[in-house]
Picture 1 (tube, rainbow, N blue to C red):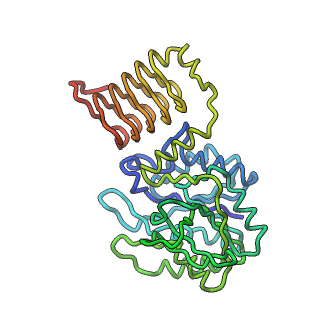
Picture 2 (cartoon, rainbow, N blue to C red):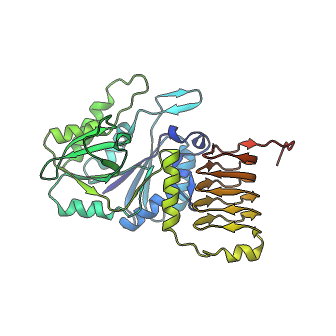
Amino acid sequence: MWVIAPLAGIGKRLLPFTYSKPKAFIKIAGKRLIDHILIKLKKTFPKNTNLCFIVGYKKRQISEYLTENYSNYFNLQFIVQKPIGYEADTPFFSGLGDAILLAKNLAENDDCFILLSDRLPLEDYSPILLKFHQDICDGVMNVKQVKNPQFYGVIELNDESYITNIIEKPKEPKTNYAVSGAYLFGMSITPRIFELLEEQSKIKLENGQEHHLTPVIQKLIDEGFKLKINEMKEEILDFGRPESLIEGNRHLLAEIKLEDPSYEKMYQSGNIVDSKIVSPVYIGKNSKILDSVIGPNVSIGDDVILEKCIISESVIGDGANLKKIITSESIIGDYCFLEDLIKKSITIGDSSYITTSNMKSF
C-alpha cells in the first residue's frame, strides 16, 4: 500500500501564517500539525510503510523536517508539484487531483491511501482500513456528519449504503455527510483513478480554477465502481480555516495528558510568577508567564513571554512576546511582539510588531 499526502499548497485561508511556513507546520498543543497527523499514521500503519508527500510551497522546509524526524519509521518519498503561476510572490497550484496524479508511477497498481494535511481525526486511521477489508467494495472514504456541509465535499448514499453522489461544496446540501480527509482505494480501482486524473489534467484551467479529486470519484461511481463510507465516531479536526483551527486546538488540548497538570514545576522554577493558569493550557519550553491569567484552551509555543496578559481560547507561536494583552479566540504567530492591545479574535502572522509605546526593538 502507498500512503499519499499532498502538501504542496500554500493554505490561503490561513494567511498570513503561511507566508513563513507551510500550513502543516502550525504548532498546536505542543506539536506541529504534521506531527499530530504522523503520530496517527504510526498508530495505524506498520514500520516501513511507503509514504509519499507531494510538496511544492516551502518544499525544502517540509522535506528536511520529515526526513530528519520520520525516515526511521516510514519509507519516505517526495515528489514536487510545480506551481502553475504566481500572484505577487505567492505560488498557486493546479489542485488536489493533479497532486495525486504525480504519484502515478508509485501507486497505480497498488492499494492507495490518500490523506489531507488539514484534517486530523481524533481517532486513528485504522477504522477505514478495517471497513475496506470487511466490506465488498472498491474503496472507502472517511466521512463525518457536520453542521456546515456547504464547506466540504458532501456524500449521498443509496439504500445499500453505497455512494451515489459526491458534490464539492454544494450551495444546498442534501445530506450532512462531509468527506473528512481520508480516502482508501483498492488496486481494483487505482489504475482507472490515475487514467481519469490524467485526462482531467489536460483540461485547461482559467480564473483560479483547480483540478479536484471529487469529479474523478463521481466518474468512478458512474462507471459502476463500488465505494462506501466509514463514518467517523469521534471528531475530525479541520485546520483549514482560522476559526476551525481554534476549535481544533480546544479538542487537542482536551486529548493530551500534561506531564505537570498543576504547572507546579514552572511555579517553582520561576517561569510562572504571580499568575493563574486555567487548564487546559499547553506551555512550551523556556516560556515565562508573569502577572497574567491564561486559559482555558491556550496553546503556548517555546520561548514565549507573557506579561500582564489575560488570554483564553487562543494559539500563540514560538518566540512571541506579549505585554498587556487581553484577548480570546486569537491566533498569534511566531516571534510577534504585541503590547497594549484589547481585542477579541486577533489574527496576526509571524514576526509582527504592534505597540503603542516608544519601543523600537525587542
